[in-house]
Length: 330
Image 1 (cartoon, one colour):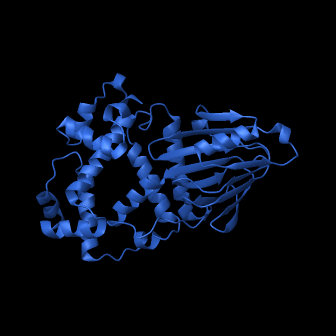
Image 2 (cartoon, one colour; image 1 turned 120 degrees about the horizontal axis):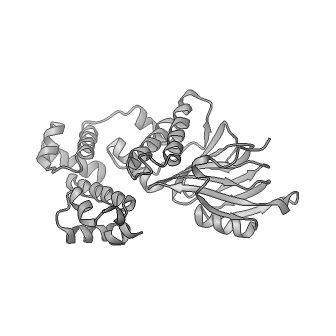
Image 3 (cartoon, one colour; image 1 turned 30 degrees about the vertical axis):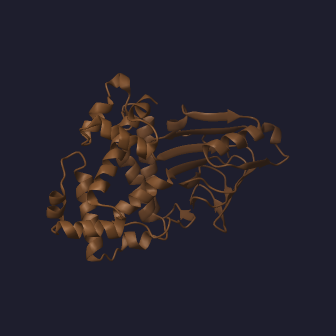
């Protein structure tokens, strides 16, 4: 039974196509992680590898197809989490000491730095949802209201037939739709953050991990509750003028108590956290913006509360290693 081919939303977004196995391994190494690719003798002359995909900001949707049977070994996954979902056939995956048959009803979730082995059966293309490690860690930190004691580590096997997993499938379909339609919010550079946060939250809530219990059934000390409520307030007022008095008033605690909570849970101060989140939002606008559409560094900086352009540029370069104008021009 032949697969239905490349998802329509990705069909016009080819990253590479090659009929040479060494070249395919090299290109996959650049796109995903350094990899070794080996083919069986049967049908090896018919080998053709293709990778299609799009990246929003911190979330990418990729489609990998070898056509024939192939073995792909990645000694160390890159700094990202990924959900591997075959759209046809089967892929035997070895990850975190487990071997799992991955197919259209069973996916595999990988964590950074671990070895990943994949044995592709004939006609077994795979859809990969990739989330950058830093983004997922930051998102979970905001949800929990505190720093993580250890990196996120997911249970590798994901059963796509459960009722809970239907929400994951729905989130993927929403992403596909937003990418496919030219007049969608995402295509117009809006709502990208919301889509990414939906995907990250859904994965964190549904897939077992070493932090899921804290997220699903949190038992919060007063300090953690204060920090979480302060983070919610800051997130909702990033574009507004916010003072320590505003934050303390809205969480019904003293300024000192809020500051102490941030030091203990996040190892920072409320105002430094606010500044960092504004820098992240400014970068997102610059990445999405196009100079021909009238987007300027000055407008973006002022939108997120940076009224001194020189200071904004210094902070921006220190955080990302490039100037705001360089980001806008890319």
